[in-house]
Length: 149
Image 1 (cartoon, rainbow, N blue to C red):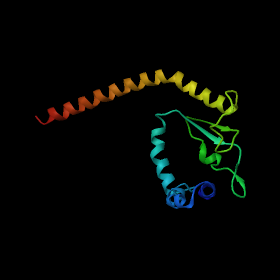
Image 2 (image 1 turned 90 degrees about the vertical axis):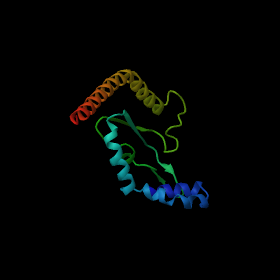
Image 3 (image 1 turned 135 degrees about the vertical axis):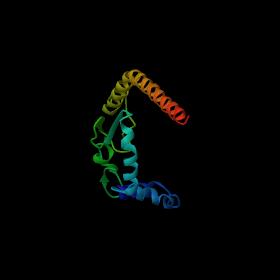
Image 4 (image 1 turned 45 degrees about the vertical axis):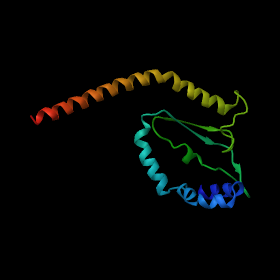
């Protein structure tokens, strides 16, 4: 992936700027330690969010080839509790919808609407959970303070 990203950037970005992004591009390489660290930190947080992964289904024209900028496995890992869908567009076009009737637009809108409808119940549940956790913490602090008396 970093090789493709370098080719895309080298075609679009002045060399002076490109040289400063070398470490960033290295971090984006498949199986990089940086990406693994990000994943390791993100996975425990995922259950608190609704996640919908999208991936490009059309290759991007690069300097001398056509290829995917991000492959499906990287863009949309198969994980419990997440949604995923391909978008019939290249990497740079996948969030630039031609009209409200385009497939990618309809898929994204349906997901957003589903998440919006479920948000009030999620907020209520989290409010109750937060209040219960605060009560437990206060009780624990009170027990610790009185234990020393």
